[in-house]
Image: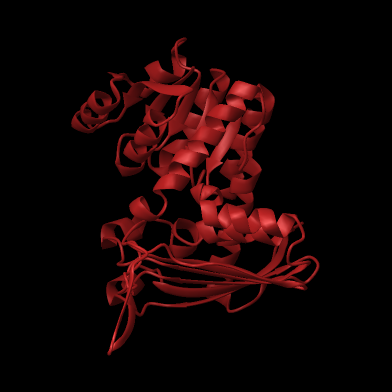
Length: 330
């Protein structure tokens, strides 16, 4: 049985806690959060103890930690947990600074602890099916990937001001998905964006509507579009065009019932938010993490995957600022 400590008991920490609760080979031993009520509430739900983050990292009865705290705290927690010999599951982004992520890579390499970056969308049943079928050669060589990701509504402005921007906060998932599907590294990034949803987002120095074109070392292309607004629900779609055919994953709807009347055909709206849409993916990624540790395997996405996605987000932000295509180092 894998004994886990959860550091951070906010929304995503609770999601991970409930995911661990669904596993047969893992359990949450302790949780930690600066807000005592949040920690107490999650601890009661998971039948776990409330401890400080230092106590969780030092504890002999805990094998692995889930870091679900604000991004600014990840660096210190990763270093402390790695030096304590704990396996680490860390929410994205690892850090807003690529250099600090490289520091984390170094301590992980030095200590040899297993590390997994929380890009949950790789574990969505439909998206992982697409990737497996690409790998099997079903559509031949990948030529063009299209990823659409749109939230039902923007987050609060206070969150926007500290999020690092749409590329580092929202599109970073799509950058990782692009690498997952393209099968090779991205060589250049070109981005455009506008504040069309809420002028306050523009005043905060960010955009809420963005499009990015990626080009790989061999010339494969990926187009990503993001919006902070979708009146019809949480829009999550992708398409991969190859030399022998095309694979597509559509939205998950609230139900699969379709009605036909004299007015036409109608279906249910898309699931409203990421908690519903990716519930299965969150469970699957932690099952994979626990299974890897049980088998002695190294989990992925790795810390390097986290760095690659961050570098792409940084390049997109620079491209938007300068209007230029930004090259990425191999």
